[in-house]
Image (cartoon, rainbow, N blue to C red):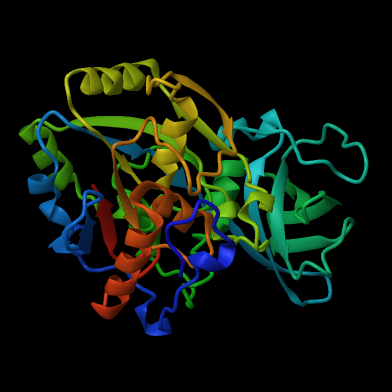
Length: 371
């Protein structure tokens, strides 16, 4: 571990985590997760319970939530040979998928020009070496997936073939796409617990996990105290699971993700700042949106589009004053963002203390607040 330097390698963001520290199930109650508080001004790390945020966030501050909703993106089926196969849908590539509620996007460069075929999606497939263009995965009698093409980054362009509306087909046959470090099949409870209580707009293949700790009663208590709630959307893509492979983080390719922040939200957050309040980002997804839309003076602007912003040390934050986040994978872009906000050495020390103190890590794990 290094400190006092301006350039960090990917190895600098590695740390040892016993496998037993990876949370495989959520707690019975969302807001009973532990909360590690790291003060950027110095002083010892403090240990709280998540619902203590009512005492920790002052009246007049703003708490910003990501309202994205995870959709049942994992399709499990079989090849014609009978061998098992999986397709993880990332995002639709044509307007015919508009009924899913997920914004369509332009495909990554394919090996040949694409015809305007309905129900095209970008996806990851397994086994990747076997599912080449022209192959088919049979998910159910009323749903199969045709592999149309490969993209420049190893994903696939697939077509969903179904007599049903696509949204209905996914609800009927799709599964919750739990992260790969959760070593079990999703159960009935995951359909509810792997969503925030304020999830609204479908489009993510992973939950914005810092928000999983909030209950409606906690949000109500914060509002009654005088904390303003702001809402935006960033649809989380598969890039959240991918480690940084290059030793030089600058060589890492960030996957673009769709975001939207309304005029109402931007105006409310700017007013909070003008009145002397602070902006609390709930999760790295919110932080990336706010930093994408903040100008050099820290003024936030409404808008929508795609962001591939990669925040890592050193970085000057303009749109975020406080950060609530989960504990993230080693060598990940998410950990790099947290280190950029809280300071490399303090954040890595806090991670070490969290491991020693028995905190639960990753999506269903505990949280930290960097203040």
